[in-house]
Image 1: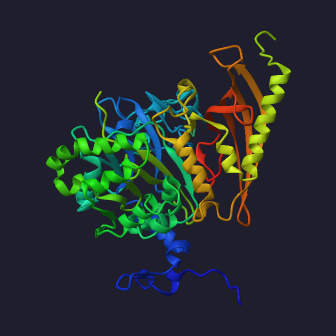
Image 2 (image 1 turned 120 degrees about the vertical axis):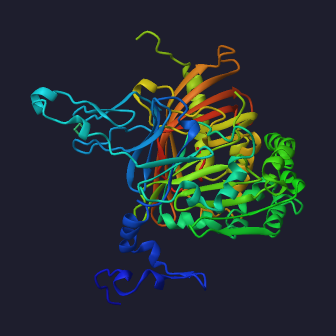
Length: 358
Length: 178
Ligand code: FES
Ligand SMILES: [Fe+2]
């Protein structure tokens, strides 16, 4: 076999040749070709709405989290006037990250390199030795942190885009909002994020994750077969057969033109909580909770969404994913936070149950 | 040095031997024996480990009820063991090769006594994992165990907290036990 220099598929074909949507076939090149990755970096990640945080992570003025939008490190902070802002986590002096922690509360972000400080709105508020180093000739108003131009929330989830001309977040979510509501809007008060973020590195192209959550429920019966076996052993009446049984009940697959997707099941209330009741006391508590709130949720969202979708994986294109599982509520959100490079991306996971009364 | 706690040499020896025995059970994949070391009320828990400013120290670890890397009671830890042995547990088939190294064993009596009921035992670990053809993971951390007297191996693990010294989990999975 001849090993020539690596050539990009894009040099001798178009993206359309790599994706045959009529047959549901795609070329493996889309996961591996650096030219495709470069095009995504230029044309996709700067334009899409990307998930940043859950509002409950930013309750008070000065609360911040650091995350990524595509390859760009960003700080998300609640300003003194209550606005949630996003800004590039890169000092305007020589580019050092000004925030190197996951979260906290701050009045200013001080760059560890030469000490430039930026306030919660990104304004440059202190430059050490401004007089001797810069003869007081630096126009500090011109060197604030670069803002992410648009930040918007949907029922507790904060998204942002670098594209000033992007459609509104609501338009971008499109019909996906209907599905998101079954996680985010079940009750008055919405959801809250539990503390802690489970971060792991995904060794693979970001689109593998996106595609997975957008609709591969097919794998669950096989890939996760050891989980129901763990709950119930090899009992023929146990969780494992019930698990595959539920997977063969009628489900629903949604694919939005924006790239969003989800699949899941609308089970009867009994099927929804029956599996939980067979597990542990903790799971029975969750089943009780579902039963006790069912009518309230049905009033808000309609009977159908009070019972699902469950066993759900979902993608808000391109990087926000979540699971809503009748076996393991509360819903788990995760997002491709970092990178993506061609071959790896960082994934963070949150748990976002309905908000507790406080 | 005032305040340096000095555990009884015999107790120190006994507990270290117990921890080595436990590591052997894990490395030899004798999970059915391993789970028997845990008490009925045992909790097996590994918090997430955030990067926080020095002034926010004390908030790096998630607390109970928040997101965790592991959060098992005795029942669900038993499930995990059953999963490790299941025929369709792809993450561990073929099984990982592990070596649990345990050291820096620090022992203080449990609060309810002078050691006659048991000890709070902190130990450091390095777990080397080699998987499939060439995948290598090295996890370092601390375990905080509550060891009570009794049980087949002389000691029973009442509670275990695992502090993993990683912010982003760097391995592909956490399919081994610590
Ligand atoms: S790089 Fe930030 S102050 Fe110089
Ligand atoms: Fe899955």
